[in-house]
Image (tube, rainbow, N blue to C red):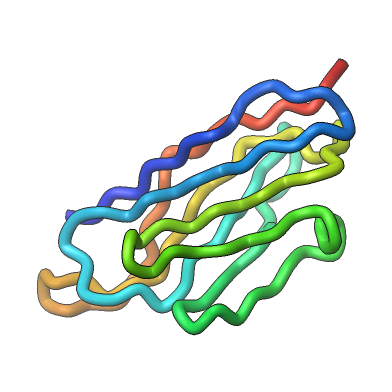
Length: 121
């Protein structure tokens, strides 16, 4: 069994910063990539940022220059540093990991429960 646990969400004023963390645990053989998605009310879930085990990254245009994704492979943890937050960033943020597990050594995606980020005065 694999679990992803997010932390760091909350309420912040426009222009403020938050750092999200996501730790993967359980029957993990290797992690190919970890990603952050978000979904605002009435909108489709979108990819915010992604990082491979080798450190290659990509970002949504809407967050490029403001958000930074990083990882600690030894801890199976991914981070999302969010700066200069805007009200439009308000959403539930979901952690995603594409990994190979140790139960049949199958490669598949796993999802966290999500954490609420609210940017408001």
